[in-house]
Length: 461
Image (tube, rainbow, N blue to C red; front, side, top):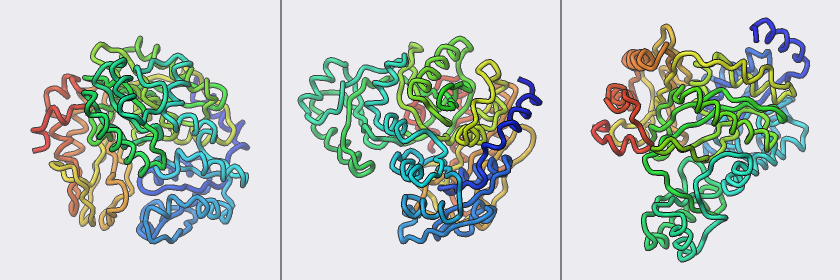
């Protein structure tokens, strides 16, 4: 579809657009959302706690509401306070970003009760996808491949051992309401279940208020591949895949794309679109898979929100995903078809976390000097600047450095050059680790699994 046609379609549906949106988040994603709102001609309102009162997104917003709490996290988790703030400023909608309340159906319900749009899927869909057991069943019926697992939650060690014998060791215990790797543990033999179940149930209860866990076949030698999807409640399309296998503590630190052949992309892409349509998905979603050493895919979960690494897809498709998510939330239909999505070149994102590159422990503090790289094919998404105080209370992500190249080799060279140009004084960052990864032979040869850092301990020295 020509750019002119897209522009005409946008203008025809412009009357559906929101007037004012409250951003219920902080940091780089809040600034990213603000930029899309400005592009769409929508006023942006920020909430913030004490620690964030002078941050870039708060200072750039049209209005800011201080939610005072002793616990810094509580400012972004108090549903009633955020709903009250949205009503106070006359917001038509709330964008939750990622983390915090982004996947909370109670929050989406409360906004709906007040006539305020939640920029994301419906509360019903959030409930389906937020329960990993239900999500597995739903996506399996829609035709997505899933790993062999327990038929429901498991709490008894002897029952777990029996099920694991049928599945085949090793198995992995997962929290039904989990995320971020919390409540996960690999089990190699039946005698490990008693302690492993207790540990996973305790962590799940503490983190999610739900101690249900289930078993799944552990995929050895696996790669992590995910698909970007956009739905309008009736139809859906995908924007290709991202490769996200380089992780620490089950959380990604480097992502890239594309990764698959056109044939495999078309096959798995059609399946994720079917999965999105099966639940009437509306908004941005990421369908995550493990791919084994034989090339077989196994569905992991759906992240029903904008993803940290959405930038990779934006770079290789040329589409502003955040703006598209806002547009469909306002009532627009998908502005183009699957055939209009084209992938060009290769993109890589490095998460510049404020962490010790050897121990991977958080390194909060003040940025005494800060210089971000630029140039052809270089993008930096960050809220940080010289003088910024990186608080210890939140996630350690300082910035996302994304590059585009005509092919993977050029993207690797461009990312290394951009990392070399980046100057951050005052906190430790993962920049030395990223540069070591970029020069490592297995990475360059695409021989990467989710155990990459464990299999290359020298990179942490």
